[in-house]
Each structure stands twice: as structure tokens, then as C-alpha cells.
Length: 197
Image (cartoon, rainbow, N blue to C red):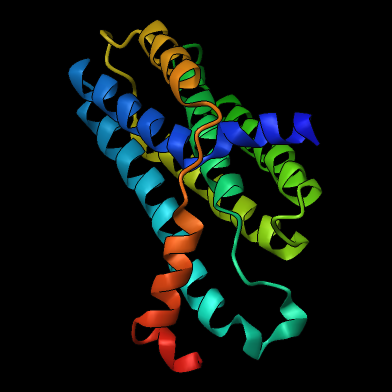
């Protein structure tokens, strides 16, 4: 179980939110405004959709118990969009071939969704439908990021992204953002979600 916890902590919002923010800033500072905007929109939309679904299903999921969908996996979605999106960015610096670009993005995003999904299942945190929902949303976000980003700025240096990731992993891996308890409180307290109770 310790190895599953170690892996899943790379998908915690405490790690991925600072990493996604750092990546957007690196893109912006390198002059790649379109890439920064595409990245921010794709990651933001992915996490926003997960948040909305969590609010809806935490409050109203009991109305369809056979779905076994109470809280779509944020770890799975976030890992797929961030790491899969990064693979797409890295691939853009190697090739302009759209087939290989999207194949690489899709493959890495699906791999990340699978690995992080398994860790969430093995830790007993999520059900299979919750992991699948998070995975599909995250993979969609990664592919969208790659599609919208365009050609990277010639001043973009991927080692800046790697260095930022290394520092963030070093400082924040193992830190847990207690987002789920806050989301649960909001889902049960605020209209329109509270009406399901």
C-alpha cells in the first residue's frame, strides 16, 4: 500500500495545482501566450468539471446508487491532464506531425489515468466508475491542451519546466490538500446541490 500512496501523491492537488501554475507562468514568460492560455483553459476546465461533478454527485449520487458514482476521481483527472498535456508540449518541440503529437499526448494521458486510477482503487478511495469518469475528463483535457496550444515559442526551454517540476515534487510530494472535505461540505450546504438531501 505504501507504493500506491507514494504514486498517488504525485496526483494530489497540493502538487499539481502549483505545478500547473508554474507551467503556465513559464509558458507566459517565454512569450508563448497562446500556449499559456490553452494550458490554463484546459487544466482549469478539467478541474472545474471535476469539481462540478463532485458537487452534483456528492449531494445527489444517492438517487442513482447503481451508478456507484459519488465523487469522480480528481487525482486521476488532474494527473491525466497535467502529465498528458506536458507530454504533448514536449512532443511539439520534437515534431510537427499531428498524428504523432496527438498519439503521444493520448498515450501518456491514458497511461497516467490508468496508473493513478489503479492507485485510487487499491487505496479504496474511489470506485471504478469514479476513476473512469476522472480519467476520461483528464484525457480530454490533455488532448484539448495539445490541440489549442499551437507551436511553442522558440524561447521556451523544457528544462525550465523540468526544473520547476523537480522543485515542486521535492517540496510538496506527500503534502495533501484536503479538498474533498471542503467540497463535501459545500455540496451538502449550498443550493442547488443541497436540495437532493
